[in-house]
Image (cartoon, rainbow, N blue to C red):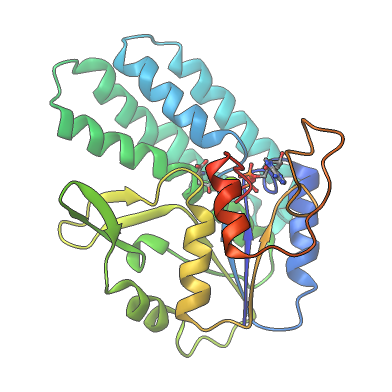
Length: 263
Ligand code: ADP
Ligand code: ASP
Ligand code: MG
């Protein structure tokens, strides 16, 4: 059993999704695939939230652009026989669900803090729900799994932490599954008490993948992204950056402290 995680940079375009398809189809063992939202989508969902709250109706234009982007990607990667099904999923979220959430924020400036926060968490979860639908339908016989049904959080003293029930739930979710490819969302989760939408924080898909790999005692976890590995600095910004062949925890922690978002 292997867990593969593909971040926004890997599921952002038709070409990169085609790569993802090849990588998944070349696996020789059972695979759980964890996906982030299409690159930039989480930021866009949050930007639209700010706009709607500020009574700026240009969020509607962004919503339309987001819709067109997802449809273009579907046309590019999902086989014709499943394309309509996939478009219906996207239609449902980007033409029905999300406009309702944004409409609520737009129309009710006096919403209390908790209600706004709840709506925002629901909105932001859509990025991964849409990308995972595309990846599932892109691959023949891939089995979809809804991660908030097993990745559970709870709030303790104002801090959100993973609920203890998560590992058992992951095991139960995948136990007895014989199919080769399973696809689920990174990042998103659910409160174990009240069932509210929650998430694991920005960049949290890596964490989702790590949780699943640990709970299932996977042979390995691969975090796929658009660079060849850990570098001494961001290779997109520093042409002299060198690849780090092996890295221990201490160096990883230091890199995180220095802002290396790749970790
Ligand atoms: P993903 O969307 O796959 O989760 P991220 O954007 O979170 O990917 O992280 C990958 C990006 O991190 C790379 O595209 C790279 O530009 C950047 N990056 C920053 N610091 C480093 C580093 N030290 N080594 C490698 N990549 C880095
Ligand atoms: N989509 C989320 C984010 O942009 C989670 C992730 O990409 O890991 O933060
Ligand atoms: Mg990331």
